[in-house]
Amino acid sequence: MFFNSMVITQQDIFSIKSANEFEQTTWEVFKYQFENNAIYRSYCDLLCKHPSDIKSIEHIPFLPIEFFKTRTVITGKPQIQKTFRSSGTTGSTQSQHHVADMQLYQKSGQKGFEMFYGPLSHYAVLALLPSYSERNDASLAFMVEDWMCQSQHQINGFYLNNLNELSEVIKQIEASQQKTILIGVTFALLDLAEQFPQPLKHTILMETGGMKGRRKEMVRSEVHAILTKAFEVDQIHSEYGMTELLSQAYSKGKGLFHCPPWMKVLVREQEDPFQIAKLNTTGGLNIIDLANLHSCSFIATQDLGRIHSNGDFEVLGRFDHSDIRGCNLMVV
Image (tube, rainbow, N blue to C red; front, side, top):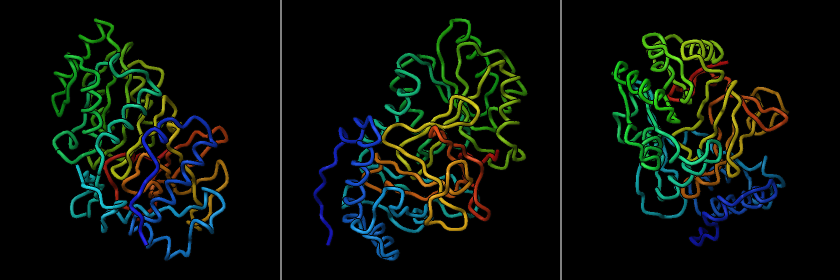
């Protein structure tokens, strides 16, 4: 039997400040989605996992991300406001994430960014996202466009292949000492580094992964070495997100990511997907995204990574035979 009532609110999610509050809210979201998400409930039933059988949040069932390619993963019967699709590759099946509350999506994106970097109104936002900004169903482009709306800086903008124009804009911004975020996919940032290197003293350079067949795959340390040299910066920042999520994690350098308080990353063993791996052990990434209320908050990704004792995590690549998709394709 499915119940349509929901007692979890945005306030419950975005006011989380401690591990205990996170765990308590996680249990409430799990029970709600177990009862009201038909796809997730079927998966839990297949595993014979009921809320009363589970003693820790690490053992909550994580829905394989492949379900977003073949099923409509929604909780309850909400009206869908927007559908985001993964970039995929030619001939591959795209994941679809049906979002029932765009206000919740935007709030998660804004609060997550500002938790790590401060108010968006302090920044100009430049985006180098070819293959994303041309699409109206790309969650990455939507997120960055929303940053620009919050920033309201007159020089904000998306750039496709016009690297010369972008380079001139960066020079103007640097001369004015305006704090800026330049977010881009890896292959495009490497193109910019090769053609228009220049020192960045007031600009945060943030890569969001992705070669998309434009260049050979490179380890993250190699990419960051090229970018730090070309732009004379100490660290390259990174964003970790995906179509199926509502929240993002950020790295301020060395590929070490941090989550906002309503998001948590766990690592599962490679040989046993239902067993949580030990710290500093490489395995598949499981993600709890409590903001993903109307879809599924418990997702088993195809990314490989490891978690450190302080809670930082790294993304080390992808499982063999998994689809190569737009974000975070680099290996370490």
